[in-house]
Amino acid sequence: MTQIENAPEAPDEEVIAFDGLEADIAKREVRVDGEPVSLTTKEFDLLLHFLRNPGRVYTRLQLLDAVWGYGYDGYEHNVNCHINRLRAKIEGDPANPRFVLTVRGVGYRLGDARAAQEH
Image (cartoon, rainbow, N blue to C red; front, side, top):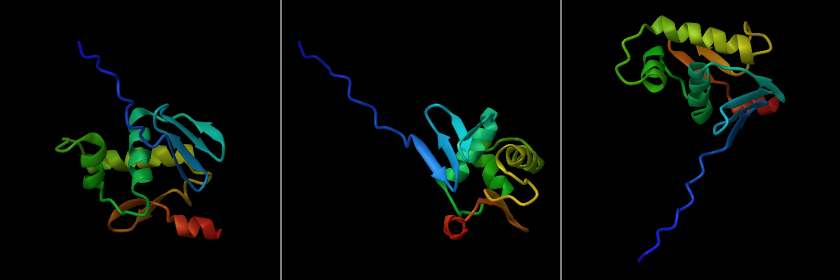
């Protein structure tokens, strides 16, 4: 009789960090400058999408597809609301964000890591 061993699962990136912002994927926990931040499921998913693609600009429609699911029958305004709530929780000054930045006329992106390191 052949015994099948359980192969260890390939570990996901356990923690993704960006300029004082850390997301523990397995625990679905976020910290900003060491302080825990409570996020909803969609806020976490949205932040994780940005963290996995730093610097890349996404339109609202691209974010709807990526975070809510392809063909999600929602409104682009839904993205704006979640971005605003996310910023209120992770940004020291949501009016002048350092993490989730607006690219006028296009959409949003996670701040530039090179610029963050220069500060």
